[in-house]
Image (cartoon, rainbow, N blue to C red; front, side, top):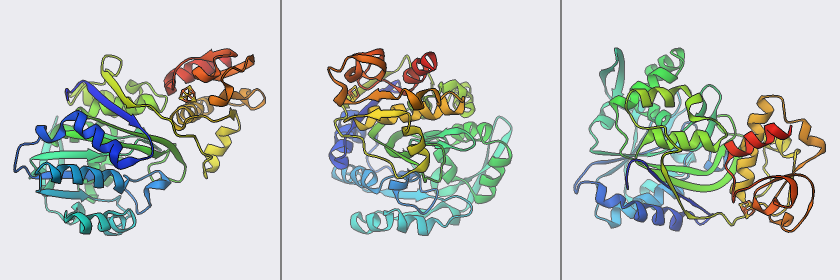
Length: 363
Ligand code: SF4
């Protein structure tokens, strides 16, 4: 696949979804035979992926199966959990220990690694030697929110490839600058994003939003621009995305990219266990809404709430879902199914940024 291209698919049957993405991306052909391949999930904490923070082991398993079937056998899953968390516990709780045993792929805790200092733009940082020794790096981030940087995805996921002392220093430096520079020093070759179930606004999970989506690309800046957009942000609002583009890591031009959807979502949205998501959902009248459509609306509502404009919809709820097909009435409708509402944003599904702009006009 080309660097200005993203492939997106939806559903709940994860393994076939991932396989189809990888085949369409022709990943195996992009990797030199005999290459030492690193697989970098996001296991920031020891919490199962259903809580919205960590990469689904099913996605990683589908990737490993695909690579092994194509003759790529020198694989290593590497990660260093957050400073206060144990990576080995995260490997176990998140399902990677079982995955490692099943496929014979070793796990490596980068906290235990030796580190080499490299510099970018006058910014020195300690990088994991195991990461530096890889021939090909496959990044498996989660599409989710972040309390400091608003969103997190491919670029920030490389924080697992530095020492704990460096992670602390990154935070004191405000994250954006060092993350952008880190990505000039460690090159991501391929990105497979877990957008099945990511947190609304916190990197450690707890408020999961089910999106039933997986996507892939080769440019981490473009992937993160997609992630920001899917959460209702302009990619250039996110400091490290803008800086990474300025440092020529990639392009944040999501409007100019080729984004192809392989399979549309046909799964039905389910209620969330999260109190925060439940609060946002009070502004919604959902009837048989697809998961992706509903998730885009929830992300838009989170941004709207941040601007203090959500209350307007508690009384006149936003209509969404296939249950509104053919319904004609006054009100606000999201998506093609709710085209009969007097105020409607089209799309199947409409993206979060468009929904947000539309709702701001209605509030
Ligand atoms: S517009 Fe209707 S069919 Fe399309 S994604 Fe939304 S709910 Fe599903």
